[in-house]
Image 1: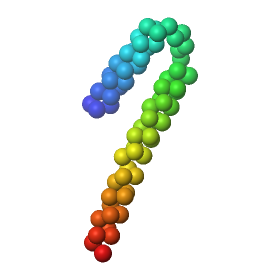
Image 2: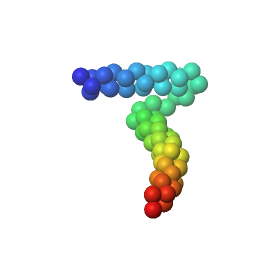
Image 3: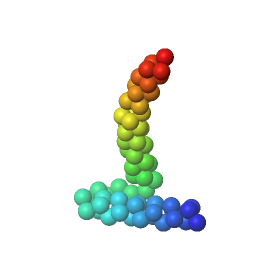
Amino acid sequence: MLRNFLHEENVCIVSSVIHFRSLILLLTSGPASKLILKLCLAIWGGFLGALLVFPGFRTARMHWTALE
């Protein structure tokens, strides 16, 4: 059930990206463009994760020293 839902959402996102790409006149298609999209999303996710995780580490260290 979840797999079908995620597949439908992925098809919807890919079709939206293809439509947007056609609007701005990018003529590339195929696996290379999907790979670049996934690479950009992975980089963005890593950057956002780093922004949220490292302050959490500092807060945890502060609480740990407060307990000592």
